Length: 73
Image 1 (cartoon, rainbow, N blue to C red):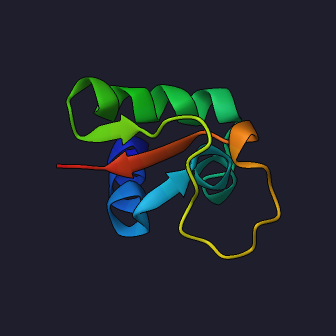
Image 2: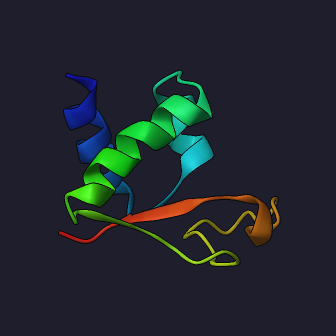
Image 3: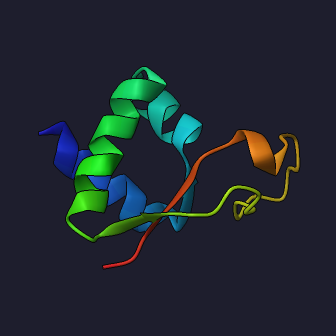
């Protein structure tokens, strides 16, 4: 089931941009967000505040334009 694949991806990714998650699973961002929100409701994921930085060093996107999630369980 893809929810468990999303869980595993989030666990392995540390801080994960929603757009990266969606691209990895070839999903629309809204579909990926619904799956992440499933884990967020269970207390396993938290959305980072706007302006937070991902763990990448590319700096190719504005932090204010991306949604970042972190596995916390």
